[in-house]
Each structure stands twice: as structure tokens, then as C-alpha cells.
Length: 628
Image 1 (cartoon, rainbow, N blue to C red):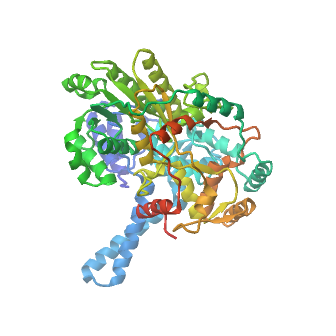
Image 2: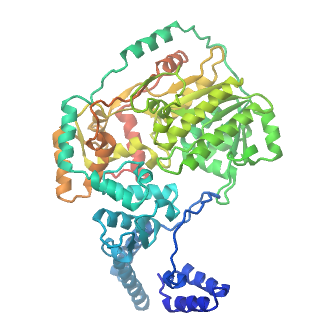
Image 3: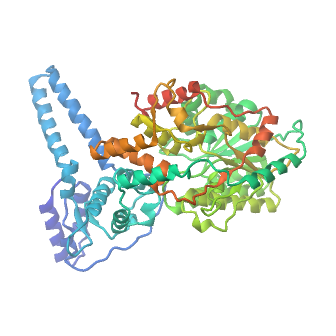
């Protein structure tokens, strides 16, 4: 950081003496600021009273160029260490060695000045007249400084004052989560340092009481599997049996299928399935990004998952258009008019599935884009829609009271205001739009998909593997090296390649009308059995719940870095010990869909140590999991 305080003071004084009319002084001040100079802004505002306001934020290209402070220091520490190792080699000429030693010393001074112990000295806190800030307020402010880079922080300002995007908010949440027992939506519900600190202080986690609460919950059997929906299941089974036998010999054949979201995880696998196991041509609309053309982006994505030869093998059936699905007419100009006559089917995979973000971002990606897709389907040649949705719309359909949701149930928006997470909320709205399109005569199927995991054949996972909650939980248990011997921490391993294959098979149904399908592996796996299997290349030791919690207390008392991992598990797997006795989760019935798939010779595979080891090997190769 440069220190051009003398120049900035002179520029400010000259600007004020000119009755604040000399633009050259402001331009000079802007230059000093951009070069990293320190500026006393109070001089510029001449001690007048000013108030911050919420200015509108425009997304433009939605690209982020903020230079991460925390990540930058990590690089500099590593670089300093590397320089020291080079000096130890004693293989440099004396003059070069002197320069390297001088540079390393300067870098060491900088790193020391920006260590966590000294960060508090760089922050000016505002918002309390007595300057008596709580420990939580100071800690959150420090994390805000590390994330956003602002050294002057008012604890009453909303986080949006920092022009924070979803990536920055995710970064801030990651920093705070290791310190406090907070939920994903707390940063938006308690949207200032003061509010969040008050929430944290009122609900500060007492690890000892948390242990007692979790043990009490399990001793009462609250977390054990209970079938609250016996009657609903019986009615569901009877309804399936009454259905007419499907004629699988009659299949729906498409000529030109538009697939959205092909640069995403499920989308790229659906594209592969269409190319390998059907004869259709595919039309793909992809945005140009960072001067990389649409075709280059697709080639790069395909190459990462399936090899560079895959695109060339099927290129005669792939039509790539440079456009934007967010725009009316997809930003294609006259090409849009041609496509609306050529395409006879749309597979709509594109969605914002992030954990964090502004509601407007989710609405645009999950609702507005669906509106554009429906408009396209209704124009020109009539087109079928195959809309990819999520189990989450069913799991959040009961306003917290729990429901048994089947393929015969449409989403219920009566309690949509109770859905706090933006992803399921906007996907519920999107399903309502699809239902309305059906009423206008569009043939549309909805595929509600369970949490997608790795490819069954090779074990490879999505590029942004940190977005997979299940993978994060499994990594946490493996890093701890222990897992509690409890029933209830179970997952359905819905493999991405199998999910794509099942969707493409169901698309071919013609002689039977069904509006909704549920895509999920019915073979449930207990996490304790999966992660403690000694046949895995990495596995955790199976311990009693009491011993597991005692180990967490040991991490806490010794200030071990593993306590933050343990705390993550408490939050995500045990709700921080706050599970209510009348808690009842919604369940999703998928028997109807899977009965159809079985008749189409599709069977969901079970998880085996061999398959899981492929996944572990992949996670190690990409640095997501450390090999013990």
C-alpha cells in the first residue's frame, strides 16, 4: 500500500480552495487512490455531515475482479518460503543473492504487518459512540476486512454496502462459520455486523451443552427413521398398480433438441447421453465469456469430462450458437426465427444452484430464463419441454411440517414465503410456470432430481466440487478420521451419468402421459457404513456418538484446527443440536418413476467400495481431499 498522504492532502486543499470546481484535483486524487495511496476522506468532505445510501447495483457481465486479500497473503507466504529455500541452496551469484535477500526481508515485513494479529490495528470501527465494541463485532469486522478489503467499517451498515456479490458472501460465510454456529441464510437475515453479532451472542454455542442436547435427541430416538407417511405410501402403491401397462415399443423421436445449461454438470452428461444413445441433432446456446467463444467453451468443457476427441466425433450433430438465454430472443437476432422452426424439443437444465446469492440472481436464472424457454416453445413449431427441477421443491413443500410428495403432486405455493433458501423458492415458481404452459397446450415433463453426485463409471466429480454439500460432509468426516455409529446420516448416491441416462430414457416415452418424474437412486447408503469401510483407500474410524462428541470437546479445549471441521459437522448433520422433538422431514416418493425405468431395462446401481474408491482417488487428484 503506497503512502502518498502529502500529495493527497495538497490535492484536497487545492480542490476546496477552488470552491470544489477544479476537476483536475479530483482526477489527481483518483490517481493516487488507484495507485494504492492512503487518503484522509474527512478532509475532502470538510467535516460536513453525510450519510451513506443504498445505491443501485448493476450486474453487467456478472464477472468479479476483486483481488482477494486473504488468498493474496497465502500466495505471498508461500512465495516468501520458496525464496528462503532458494537462498539456502547457495547456488546464486553474490549480487543476485543480495537482491533476493533484500526482497525476502521486505516481503517478510509486509507479511508480518498483515498477519491476523495486526489486522485489527488496520481497521477503524464505527457505529458506537462509546467505541465499546463486542468481541463478536470485532471478529466479524476482521473477517469483513479480509473478504472485502475495507478498513473503515460501520457495524450498522448492511453487507450490501460493500458491493458484495454471492462469491464474496460465500467467502465471508466460510470465514465466519469456523468461528460461530451460524446458518447459511443468517448473513441475509442479520444483514449487518451489529445484527449478526447480536444473534451470535444470544445463541453462542456451548459445546458442552450441545453434547448433552445431541445425546438426548438420539436417546429419545428422534433422529431414527420413522415412517410418518404409512397411509400415504399405501395410497401411492395402490395408485401405481392401477395404472395401465405402458407400451414401451412406441417411442417419441425428436429431430433437433435444444439443451440449456450444457456447461453445467448434469447438462454436459445429458448432452453426452443424447449424442451417444440417440440420433438427434442438438442445438446449444452458449455465452461468450472472457473472449472465449461459445464453441471453445463447449470444447473445453467436453474435453475436461470426456476427452478432446468427443466433440470431433459428434461435431456434425452439434450446432453451437453464441447467445444469451437471459435475453429475449436469446440474443440471436435472425437466427432465433430459424431455430423456433427447427427445434422440436427443449431440455432445460440451466439453473442457479448456488448456496448463496441475491434473490434477483436466482430469479433471473431460474424463473426469467424459464419464461424465455416457454415463450420459445410456444413460437413457431410447437416444442416439447423437458424441465429439470429438484427434489428440493418437494422437500420444502410442507412449510416445515413435512409431506410425502410423489410424481402425482404438483408444487404447492401456499407456503412459498416460508421457504427461506432462494434456490428451491425460485424452482417452485419455475414449476408453476411449466404447469401454466401445460394448460395452454404445451407438452411438458418435469424431472425432479435428487442431489447429484459423482460419475458411477469413473468416479469423477463436478469442477466446482465445493458446491456439493454431500461431498463437503464426507470430506469433513474423513479429515477428522472418526464418524459416529448412528443411524440416520444416510444418502442416496444419485450418480450423474445414471441420472442423465434415466432422463433421456424417460424422454422417449410416447404412449403414456406422465407430467412429473423423480430422478433419484432408491438404494440408500448409511454414511457410517460407507466412510468406515476399511477397503476404502481413506476411511474413518467408527466410534460411539458419545466418544465422537468427546473428541470434539477435546478439539475445542486444545484449540485444535480440527474443531472448525467438527463444528461444520455439528451444524450440517446435527443442526447444531437444535433439532426439535416434533421435527418431521418431507419425503419424496420415487417408486413410480423407478418402476417405469426398470421396465425400460434401467436399474440404479448400488454404491460399492470399488466405485467409492474411484471417487476418493479423483478427490485426491484434484486436491479436494488430502491423502492420509
